[in-house]
Amino acid sequence: MKLKQLFTVIGFSALLFSCVSTKKFKESEAKYVQLSGSYLDMQEKYRALQDEIKAIQAQLDKSKTANADLTAKKAALEQQIAGLNEQVEFLRKNSSTAMEQLKDLSVITGAQAESIKKSLENIGAKDIYIRDLQGSIARKDSLNMALVMNLKGALGNLEDQDINVKVDKGVVYVDISDKLLFKTGSYDVTERAKVVLGKVAKVLAAQPEIEFMVEGHTDNVAISTDELNDNWDLSVKRATTIVRILQKSYGLDPKRMTAAGRSEYLPISDNSTAAGRATNRRTRIVVLPQLDQFFKLLERK
Image 1 (cartoon, rainbow, N blue to C red):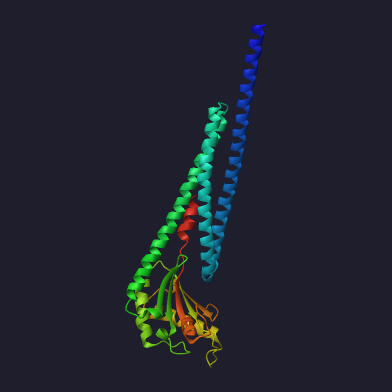
Image 2: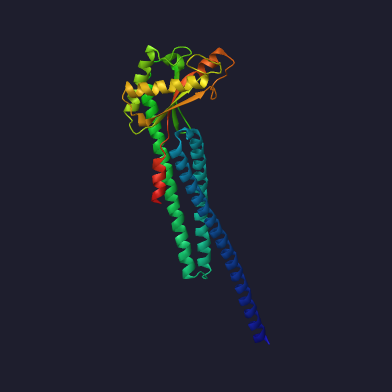
């Protein structure tokens, strides 16, 4: 009788151990399936991201005036890259944990181990890809800062309130007050304009790969003359006057330049005051973002 009871206890212990191992295996297997699904979702996000970047390049090729929208989209893409980077790290850690758990239970097959290994390698490749993109962004930001410093150095002896050089969302802007460049209500340049434009042209000539846009901006005071119908006319003619001077007097390649009139519709100050209107009357030089390096990087992947 005692021998029979002993066999019963041994059998029950074996059954209990088997149930525990099976439970752990199913829990680990479910976790692995969940992680695999997350990884596939992440791949879809990468593909969508790449498609969106290519679409932005197509827009950039069609119109250089889409600079503001492209800059905003570029910033949004950078945020998505940061989010994907966090997902990569999360999936790497959890996939490694799941694989170790399966190995400990000695139930993972050779095919499953190889599949997990390839998944981790793929995540590592995407991690390198993200770092390449971030490195390209950092290099572009460094070039922009160097350009700003060169421009400020060249224009350093002019009044600060009449010239403003800055970087905003990865784009370099040079705002020049109209009183430095033009006669009141006219697109005829002053003698002083040649000094200002000569300094700017010297810096731009040293960076032949840079493309830029010259924008004319006005206040909201209506204008109407024999030559000008409204502020649209004035802003456009001021922009084309500047690009002609940069081309003919300083030899800048016209293929690098775009002339645009913004009229009164992008003010940076309140038009209800004389000081505000004076601030809004300006010529802006916008260094167009160079996204080629990002798209070339995408093409290699």
